[in-house]
Structure formats: structure tokens, C-alpha cells
Amino acid sequence: MLLLEVNGTAHQVEADPETPLLWVLRDELGLTGTKYGCGVAQCGACTVHVDGQPRRACTTPLKAVAGKHVTTIEGVASKAAKAVQAAWVKLDVVQCGYCQSGQIMTAVALLEQKPKPSDVDIDHAMTGNICRCATYQRIRAAIHEASKAL
Ligand code: FES
Ligand code: FES
Image (tube, rainbow, N blue to C red):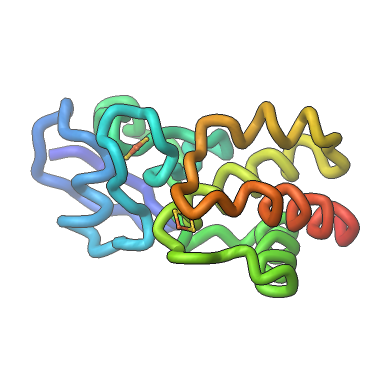
């Protein structure tokens, strides 16, 4: 039995400590906003925050998040998160949408650490988040748009 805190709520989870966090989020807790893309930390679709840092939930074992704060797309609600959500809507960033919760989680973490990022900062932070619809230009513009509100 492992104690897991997700979006401010404590959960007792019956699972092997090596189980990837993503499996528990989606299959046990029903938090399906976090997506499965590659399963090997290569696409960013599964990005969540662990103590405020972006982490790939597909390769993060449960034992690594015991006692830490996990935030998913369903629970992210900081000032930076609200600015990102508003900018994403304003600039109509999303195409198919599959990668976007991961993109947003990475963008929020960036803006929480660096409210006025340069293009280089954005490209560096977002480089591990793949978008098959190639929304990269709109993502970069939306991060700049969000930073204006911070
Ligand atoms: S599903 Fe985790 S990085 Fe691709
Ligand atoms: S919006 Fe389709 S994969 Fe990114």
C-alpha cells in the first residue's frame, strides 16, 4: 500500500512500487487528462508536476513520488497555469489535442520558474514535448502571451 498525493488529495494505492505513475493516474484514479504517448520518456504527452517540476509519468515509478506533491492537468491552477490556459485559447494552439496536456504542464513549469522566458528558454524547456500536429510556433507564441500576464 502506497500513499499518493495527487492534486491535493491523498490516495492509498495498492500497486507494486515500480508501477509507472501514469498507469495509476489513468487506470486507478481516472485522471485521463495525462496521456500515454510513447511510454519511454521520449514524447512528453504524460508530463505531470512532481513538487512543481515537470516529470514524465510513464517512467516515474510510484516509489519515486511517495510523500511528494503530484499535480496533473486536472489540478494545475496556479497564476501561471491560468495565464497559459487563457493564452492557449486566445491563440487557438490546439490541433488534435493529444499532446497538449503535456505541453501545458511543461509550459506552466517553465513560467513558474521563469516568468519572462526568451525564445531560447522556451525551446530548451519544450524540446522534449513532441507535437505530431506541429503546433510548435503557436505554443511558443502562447507562452510569450501568457508571460505578459505574469
Ligand atoms: S508517454 Fe511518457 S514521455 Fe511519452
Ligand atoms: S496537437 Fe496534435 S499532437 Fe500536438
